[in-house]
Image (tube, rainbow, N blue to C red; front, side, top):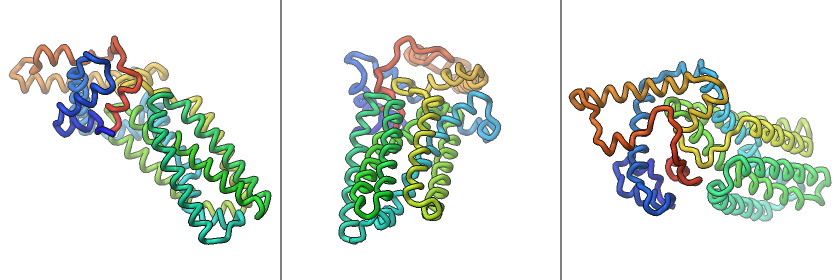
Length: 328
């Protein structure tokens, strides 16, 4: 797998970035323009990181609030389905389902790990082809059904331990096909450049807080409700998260980072996010003008390549091109 063009440009390896971009853009497409836009985006992100304080995160406008709801909410949802807690206590779960042999438990753990690894590699290709929303929905529906199978394994007693193991294998597979990689992909794609660094830190923090809460209460809740009841509850949680994502999660496939600000401004009727980015661009232009001795500091090629403020691109990039550009 090649490095992302964004990462290569950030390391001043623009020639390599162009070669990677040629793999996803049509033959003859001027990838130099894309490299220039990526470079501008990195510079803009650096300026924004120092220009915008935490107030925009703590007291967000409607557009930023919706953006944070989607990005941070997706990160929380990844752990709310119980993945870390279930993985931490797999031995306890197998023991309670009637599988007491340590060698059998070890073999099952190895197989489950291999299944998770194989599926997550396969999911990387599906995200490029099928989009985010469909894979999230399949993932959550599959996890919900899988957790029901696990609960039936406990209801059936020791003779149904195989059903519980089968349900756990399906659960890990369905998690890895959507919620696993997707929960980190969505925040990186929806957060505006202005708040990306701070918002990603909040999303990561809340993800780990949720994981800690789920893991620290897992055994207590399972013992209080019964193991079957606990897995039924987690199945319902998966369905509730699916409904939430159906309502709030936008499809980000084929949409560059710059388009997401426009999207959230439109659905919330809040133009302040676009005005803030326009001001950021203006400040950047002023700095370039000062550095260039009163001129724009840009060559004719750079001026032509510079994206218009707030404008919608005339020709969208290939559907899967932005994945290479945003995954760093």
